[in-house]
Image (tube, rainbow, N blue to C red):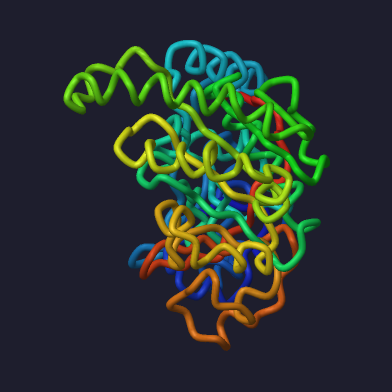
Length: 343
């Protein structure tokens, strides 16, 4: 059902699919003929009076809620009354926004199990991922600079869910927008990684002593460890990398309490592909790609054709890859604000 205030208010190509016309008071008497067919009939100047075409053209009287001079006041008061009584709102018509925000995607958010990363370009649905489904999630691009905005939005969302239980090790020293809300470190990694390593060791000891009963570690929170620049992190950890980091990866394989997120440009990720600890965390068919170039590399493998992946996109778009699924998304790039509409 469409309403408009003039006879040409709907484009002709659409109007041809709308055979039934009800006309109320029109500004021009010739508009009745344009909508109903040639006629000299004009409805009486009475509120709610109009013309319609059935087997012939008839004048009709529709119901009106109040006197014409009181109509605007009546409608405004009725809207306020209904809005205070009913909290269910009509869903918004989905569109691909110019800027995707966290608050806009929050309708689909449900902790780590339903974690929004953007809006799908084709379906316009919010794309979420289950962080707890796998031990590790990979975020990569051709250049580190392409990753900064999206990754900071992810860190904010993790912070909102887990607070200081999010450990961020930032070798690039530029992913610090929400550093105060998480356990953030950008230097002296062998020393700063130890508290996280000791936490995992303590949890694993209790888990092992209980016969690997998950109930034994229920009192522990969920943890996310984000490493920005894995190649540089490995170098800066030096001789501590294997006894600390590799030991942590080995132990969390059995415990559903810790998840890793790696953020780095694809060439640096590629250097780690054959490491046993890397294979334990990631496979080549799961991750998020930001910006251009996914079709030019083989670290993150997609089932889409090379031609499809060669389409030019900017850093506000990316691909979510999960096995046989590859989806083009407009990624979250701003936090936004909580907004509530009242109809």
